[in-house]
Length: 210
Image 1 (cartoon, one colour):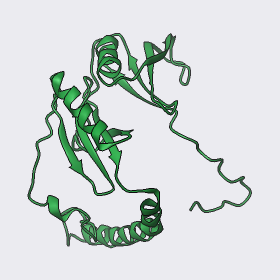
Image 2: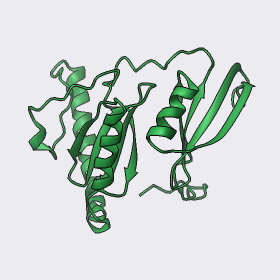
Image 3: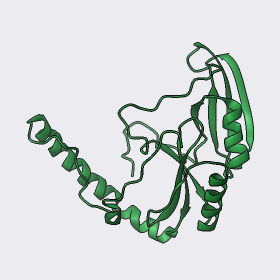
Image 4: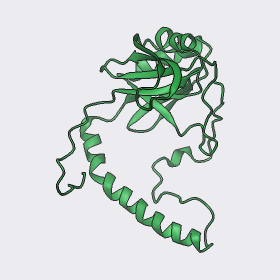
């Protein structure tokens, strides 16, 4: 739960994601992937020579694809045919966008559809509370499609321990930082609990262009 701040109104409830925006190398290439393969309709386009938030000159086409709940995934084509570069210090599997499907059967159907279009897919991967497949869009964005397995009661039970587990991680990380500063440790901090012991030793290569 959020901590109240004196003199400030409580945060209003955030209802849902409005949109996530990313750079696209080519608008039509991106449209084909999201609309023709994934089935998300192209819904809105904004074009301008200047950026409204900063005022800087940077011509763009900003285009949006609509999900079933009314939220969007959006892209900017800056007209230069340049793709966004991946982060140099972050593994390619870390930053990704996950969308929800209604069933495992739909997950299997989408996997078959992607593979029929020449797209490499990882999974179906079992996360216990949901199952997922993973793949990359034409812009190098890692996407995940998930189907929920756990019901709302199991998820509610999981939520009762989330703060305690994160607090334990934070406390251990403070000690780790002190030990690292003193030269006692060099390796990254490992979690206090391994929720996926069955994965140990199994490695799947995440290709940049798949």
